Amino acid sequence: MPRSGTLGILINLIYSIDRVLTMLPTEQTMTRRNVLNYLLGTTALATLAAILYPIIKFMIPPRIVESSASSVVAAKVSELKPNSGKIFRFGSRPGILIQTPAGEYRAFSAVCTHLDCTVQYRPDEKLIWCACHNGRYDLTGKNISGPPPRPLEAFSANVRGDEILVSRG
Image 1: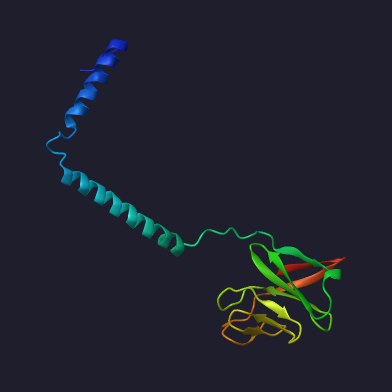
Image 2: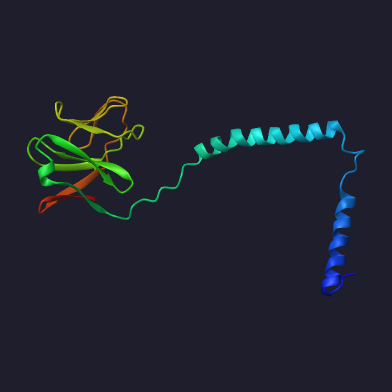
């Protein structure tokens, strides 16, 4: 029966502690075998958790917030010379800006369509190249050799003053 006041709270606390103590196992039930079974069981669970946690974290990719920006300043006009390229950041992914030998600016996603490697511009061959598996793209972004299954995503590149603005579509 609950009691009120400070004395009642103290009596209720003592009563609760007594009930908990009577529920604890006695010395006769806590054998060496029970202690070892408990320790082995918790060790097995901890080991299983240590093995499964990284596997599950690997299988579930982290959430990457895509930038809401539809255009970025990729470079200054003075940074690129004809027949050269530059990697730039477009949201959370890399992009590549190329000035063709004719002086035209072209921009693409710098992510290879094979295994998401970062591509680079090869001025000696005048093409975009993925070093991982020797994938090659022409200057329109079309895959021409190697394992890449699709062309690179094309962006539009426009000169505004002394800056080169790259935007989607």
